[in-house]
Amino acid sequence: MMSFAMYRKLKSAVDAWKHEERGKAKVAAGAAYALAAWLALSAAGVIFLPAYWIAILLAGFLLWTGFVTALMRKHLGAPRR
Image (cartoon, rainbow, N blue to C red):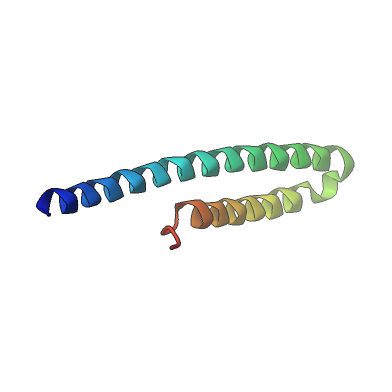
């Protein structure tokens, strides 16, 4: 009985670590792709709308930060049962 309880406890700890590592990888990949898109749109803003470039840069930063926060919540939050 005791060994089964210990096994379940260790298994849940390992599963939690695996969940966290997979979540970190997904967040990092999504954040990198979104950052690349933000930089591309910012560069396009410099070329096509130079008067509004600062506003585009700030709005893009806020959107990127919100997107990364949503990714963290989705992939690193408590596992749903």
